[in-house]
Length: 636
Image (cartoon, rainbow, N blue to C red; front, side, top):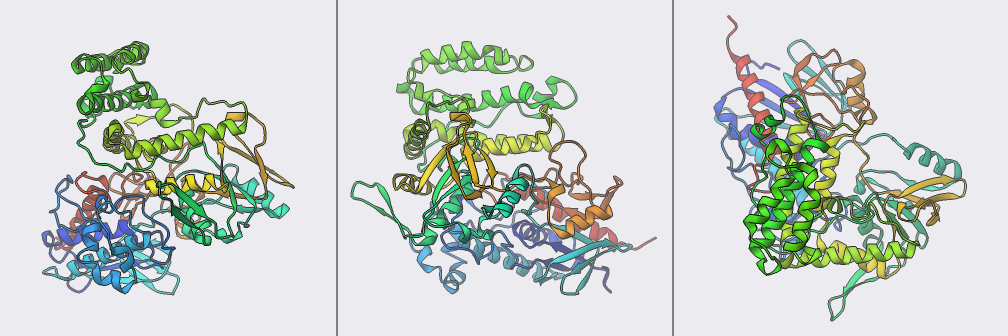
């Protein structure tokens, strides 16, 4: 609301890293708009900075899946933004500098010993970093020539409503905040049962079975999983890794390494026996454990000028864009092989590059998928070792077409695949893998932007293309630390982890849950009384359980996309919420993974990558300050 001096108050609902990132940009740009803001309210039942997902009160066994040197919440000069750079440390720099006092107070000194940029920090360490960043933003805002006060409210917002030229934000403790602008920034949201989860939950409730639904692993009650008995697990991504940690080390088990370097698991006596599978049937690829020079260039042919060659209107992903994706990844892979490992090649690179260019669509000078067979034949001559060949389909779904005589064969194939990928993650001789991942990241961000803008679409009914793109990126470039994959293998050797295979299906009856895999047809692999859905539930805005958002949808103050597919909350390009009648509410922002256009806008990211989340935070800060400054102008 406008105070006596004419300043404004704004209110953030949600105090996680997305809010902290915007606060840091408000502090960096506050000097451009003196006096525009008066008070900032941050509403969250959890401590601001980390919020719910990155709260400190979770198991110290849980790690981040990024190295410390790859994590910062501070925008640097690689970000294309209007505001000035306001430098801040990466996690590893913070641990050895400004974070020392907080680390000591939290009792995390043992983790800080030997901590380097290559360390995978615990989630508790990241929580401390994010809390410090929030407090740093508060300090910087208070130090502006015309100070801005930040007030934390450890409460839950129950209502947001228009009240003339401001918003009223109601809290569950009875407080009512008046703010010119409200920002809904709750981050990852819980969703109600969808798909087959409702009947599985019902079967569990009616038959005394145990069902652990999808969710943030630290919030799940895994104590219900019985020791010594089998449990089916759907999902082999990062949520599975966290569940694995809590169900084994978290129950008293430990890992030991013998003189040959092999990791073994020593049981604590309370472990279950997990039967795990997923659509792919294998865990995410482990992070790479080496650093070498990469010779792959930036992605090409995804710029506006190139895409305009296809003509106006939305472009179908599979027929128009996928050939460009294939060409970029394939070219990065082979360029790295030719430059870094020429002894494994048998042709001139310029000739191979011309051959690969045939994979591009005709509008870009190639022959598209029609050239695939010819290109493969040429590569088989130029690259004798089939292990050096690139295969996009195998890269995304390595077991999609696998059939096995029996389940033991399926498990043997999966074991061999995981061992190979782990060996590759340590071998600099496999540096085409690194080149591919470095190409994949900027390409994923660009494609996500094109999808959000409506430039790229999917013709597959009900498909949300951003989830497909995110799946390809996550599987190949956002996997667990290599040690976690070693631990997984140790559990397999101990007989405490079994693999179901790809295309896992689960049914339920009065006797229990029953699992099948496409690799072995309709035959049951295992039957149990426990099912764990170890993944985050798909993001359907209509299924969000957050009471505030549900009430705002019901009142028409925010809305959900139309269509048959998995719809999201609607916003304009700046993040303003779109009402049910189609009008834009310029006093209400909405952000997060379930908001249109917001999926890849991570609030913290790798330094030097021009991350879009930083760009978005700066743009929002500029919008807030500009609007506030405009309202200070005298009415005439």
